[in-house]
View 1: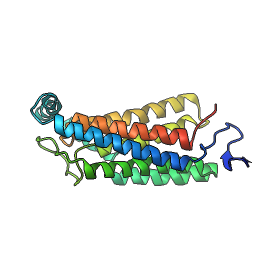
View 2: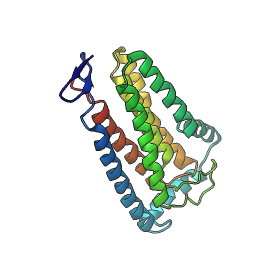
View 3: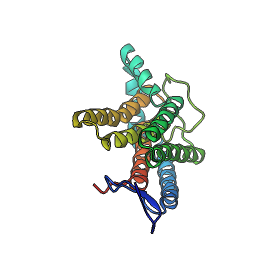
View 4: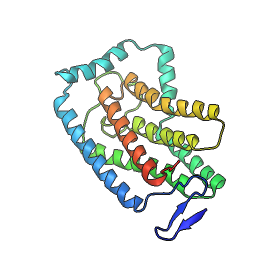
Amino acid sequence: MKTDTATEISVDERTGDAPVPNAAAKLAGVAVALFALLYLVGVLVTRWLKPGRGLGSVDLAADRDLALHRTGWLVRATYWVTQVAQTRTVAAIAVVVVISLYVVYRRWQQPVFVAVTLAGEVAIFILTTLVVHRHRPPVPELDPAPPTSSFPSGHTAASVAMYGALAVVVWRTHWRQIVRVTLVTLFVLVPFAVGFSRVYRGMHYPTDVLAGMLLGTLWLTATTKLLWPTRR
């Protein structure tokens, strides 16, 4: 490791990776912009996508069709898929990953990247649900409904942030290529499975899931570029 005295940031001698100067301020700006974007989208969704009207009927139809054709094995499968994105599960994984990364690399860059990715996503999600009020789909719900708005899907956003961050970490390790590709593929597929499970179980509209994907993806992209950029 060496230190660039001009910018006072840590640089990895092997890869040249280093956090972008003023990353915290830039991330704060991204968070504000992303919150504003989600608020705008949320307002448009709640005003234009009324259940049973126009495009809103298409949004609702997906939930109703899935609710009418539920099967026992898929109900059980989506339950377990949902569990991998529960708050306690994601928080536990984040703690283990952050500690493990610091123990292995003895640097704060990777642990901070994972922690900020998850914490920032949660903060933006909570703020959005406080200002965007959307009722959950009028179909039988298979899970207890949290007190937050249906928009956006918090489970989906959290899965993108957490498992997306894990995919970035694994991809930048020195493991064998086949191991990296396999793990990254699995991590990338998790949010899609979670998003489907939330609609299947009657907890969200498809547009809620898409908004959660948008939140998680944009925030993960920002933290990756600002906290753990690569020059390789």
